[in-house]
Length: 386
Image (tube, rainbow, N blue to C red; front, side, top):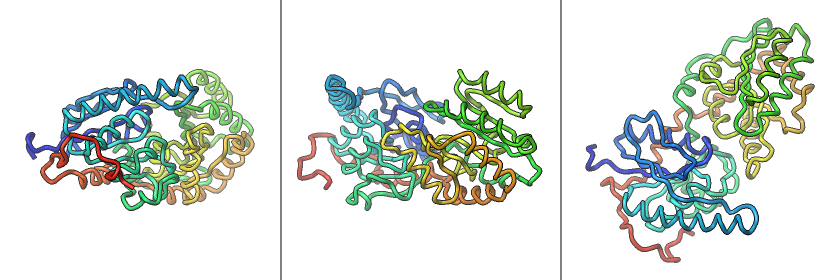
């Protein structure tokens, strides 16, 4: 495929890493298939990095319809401005396909793509269809999901929905090619605690207290990698040091794939990236959904993993030191529980999600690599997808 026939795919994303990373993973796959790429985002999203080729980055206005009347009116004004900006941009680029990854940053571009009758695909990372994708689903050409069942997905849209999974880094998916680490009744248990940008404080409070009340003979077998907030690092390190534990406590681990590879158990929130990575790697988890996540989507993510046998879920109000200490003691005394959960998590994981998502995108590309619909007038109401 030469430069003249290479299809151009526009990726609409922005906001948190949970929306941006799947877009970057798809970009990597499509570049290897000879596609040209354009990233359309809002001011919060930095250009992709580490791609084997250049990706043109464009920004359009975007806004939320939340808050008081003034905030909602301001958000609506930014959305309208963003639609106009995206309409002009897409007319100029004339992409063969536009792919959206949720978040309000994608809405103007995806609405403009519909206005211009361009082929579209949206990807949903969570077990609950997000508000942006809820708006866009009826008009999307196809919908890719991370989970088999997705709440808030209308029955009329099921026929055009396929499960691709949520892409993870190659260094994460490669972990499943190795066996689950040996864990006998006298061996050390490697515990990986992940935080996240929101709500990580609960782990910095509960984990040290839980470990402190465990019997010393069991506590001594723990090897802890704890990612926590910067303001909690000194205190948490001090607790683990006073207990004589082998631990690493940092706000961020640059070698997370290596630590996940060695982990027998993960404790963390239940965001889309966390559950995708633990299941792709085949690692059991204790999940504590962030209670203020939009539409309680983290709880929905976590309950699916729990139902498969690959995780144990605590509501934050039930995530206490005594409850966690009892569970950790149970795992140390009966390591086969973790081994069974690891196998269940592995069965649920989709390590080739990026390739599957690229296949879904590729299937929507016009045969000649160019959009077969002219970029012109808006569709009439009769042409709207039912």
